[in-house]
Image (cartoon, rainbow, N blue to C red; front, side, top):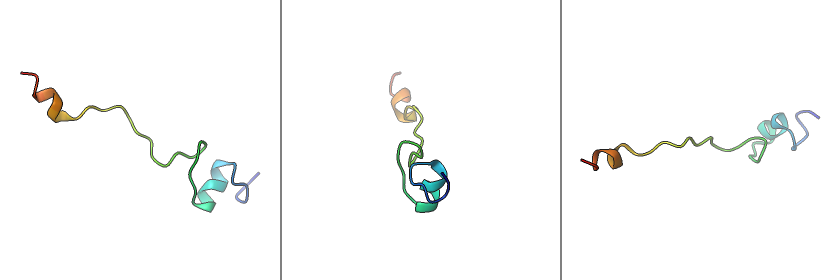
Length: 40
């Protein structure tokens, strides 16, 4: 259970892979600014 284990977050960092434990990019729910300006 360390750097050699691909199933852990530390192992994924050392292996350079992404998955459920280490998502590639955390996306937040943000609306584009242009859509809100269109409402007027």
